Amino acid sequence: MKTLGEIIEAAKSGERPDYDDLRLAVCAMDMLMTFDRQAIWKLAEGEEKCKKPFLTWSGLWQRDENFTRVKRAMAMDPKAYLGANYDPDSPAVQERRRMSIAIMDGVASRAQGKQP
Image 1 (cartoon, rainbow, N blue to C red):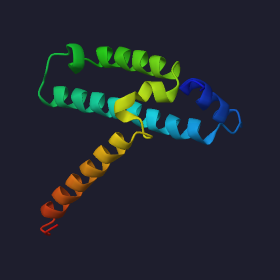
Image 2 (image 1 turned 180 degrees about the vertical axis):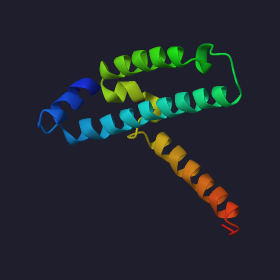
Image 3 (image 1 turned 120 degrees about the horizontal axis):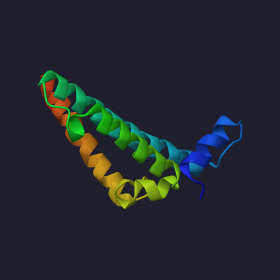
Image 4 (image 1 turned 90 degrees about the horizontal axis):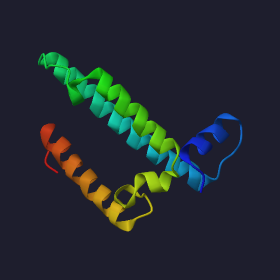
């Protein structure tokens, strides 16, 4: 399997990577976006609470973490980067997603004043 970086470069160069490579690359990129979102929220929380910029509250620390995380991900095949706990081909992962979605749907329904 190709690395995440190779898949992205191929797509940007007009090539047509394998469907499974693209599918797993999307999942890996989603995971990277999740880490970035968490970092941004952590920095915003630190700013709101006037936290001293240290480790997760530091923009410099978060920048360096992001660089290392993306560099590592780009050098791996997406399935390896996702690991067993986030492998979309795993029945256990899909069952966990179904349960999580059902729970969130129930919470959203109750929050809107509806009964599930």
